[in-house]
Structures are given as structure tokens and as C-alpha cells.
Length: 96
Length: 215
Image (cartoon, rainbow over all chains, first blue to last red; front, side, top):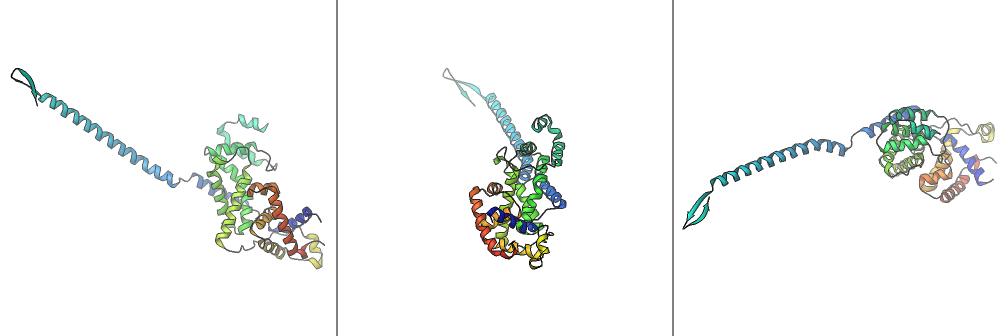
């Protein structure tokens, strides 16, 4: 008996062991895979949570920076306005 | 021709295309490129759920069958098959275009099943065995009359007694009836190595099951 014939005979003997999945199992598998594929991952959840927080923090930083810059500019303007010219021994000096 | 027709189909009708492709009763060999499958893989990479479903519907039944064959438990087999498809989809980027998806997912499910058996350290309980369609002539022979359930259990035990790799190759070849080439692709082995494992497995099984064989 050749090896291939021998294997064919073993296949015939083993055929009852072959398991076939039914329609119900296949349908369940399709639904479970679809659910896993569309379900957000931990990373997605973190990103979705972090995005609005990051936007809020960024907005606060922008507002604070703008306020500080404005305050700084108004202080500089006030300081310039307070400079008074002083003359001493014919030379012009300046004092705050 | 199908490829040209496919090219005309807009992405909005993908669900219909994949559905129609699944109705095609022509069995496709592993080495024949399926244009629907190639397209499904491309669309799945972009995250199209219809494309994922096409691939699960096409290969799910066989993947489940392989898993049940190893773990002999429908619930575990469903878990393993689900995990195999998810892993396959998560690594689609590494998948080479033009290659059939089937052997890849079968390989993942086989490896998961082997790991599962190693972890659980349970001896698989033989599943109910289908009515033997094979041994009608033998069943007629009073001397060789043997209940298909008992015979299945004996074959199962004989296969389980093989060394790990021979067992896997024997299952895939003798029970699942994959070709040497398909097993080689699934297990990432050379075809010669598959043949060698199978030759050794055959010798052992022949000795174990001598009384079941035709004279």
C-alpha cells in the first residue's frame, strides 16, 4: 500500500471526527467580531476623554497668556508716561 | 472579468458586492486569487465593517471547525475563532496583497488552539461524533463491526498520543483534510517538513489502529 493510499484510508477513518460549525455558531462569530471591531479600545476611550480636557486647558493657557501680555503692555505704557525730563548743569537727564 | 466589474462598483455598494460574492457557490482553492477577497482586505484596512464581515463569513465556518477539532468545546472554539479574526484584522497592515486570507487566519486559530490546550492542560473530551459515512462496508462485516463513536474515540486517542507537531499536522491533514501545501502555509513550515511529520505520524497511527484497517 502506498503512503498516499494509507493516508487516504486514515482520512476516511478520521472523517467522523471532523467538526462542522453550524449557521448559528457562524452568525454568533460574525456578531462578536463586528462588536469587537466597532467597540472603542482603551486608547480610543482615553483619547476621547483627553481631547476636550486638552482643549479646555489650551483655551485657559491662551486666555491667561493674552491677559498677561495685555497687563504687561499697559504697565509699560504707564511707565513710559511717568518718565519726566530733568535738566542738571545744562545736561538733560531722565528720571522715572 | 470579475475584477473589471468590481472596478466599476462604487464603494457605496460594497455591502451588496460582498453579499453577492458570498452567494457564489463555486469553491475557491487557496491558491486562486479572489478579487472580492483582495478588495475586502483593502477595504478592511480602511476600517470598513462590511469588508470584515465578508472575511468572517467566508472563513469563519472553517476556522470554527478547526478550533472545535482541537479543543472539542464549542464555547472555547468560538472564543478562539473570534480572537483569531481580531488578531488577523489588527495585523492586516502586515498582510501581503494577493495572498489568500484563509490560511493566515487558520494558522492563527491553530496556534491559539494549541496554546489554549497547553494552558488548560485538559485532555479534550471527544465531541459527539457524526454518523459514520465511511464505514458502511466495514460495518457490514460482523468481525470488524465497530461503533463509529468508539472508532472516533480510538482515532482521537491515537492522534493525541503523537508528539506535538505530528499531532497538529495529522489533525490538519487527516481530519481537516488540508493539503500539504496548505498546512505548510498555515504552520510556516516547508512542504517537505510537513510530509516528514505526516510520514512519522502515519507509521505510529498505522501501528495503533492496525485492527481498524482494511486487510
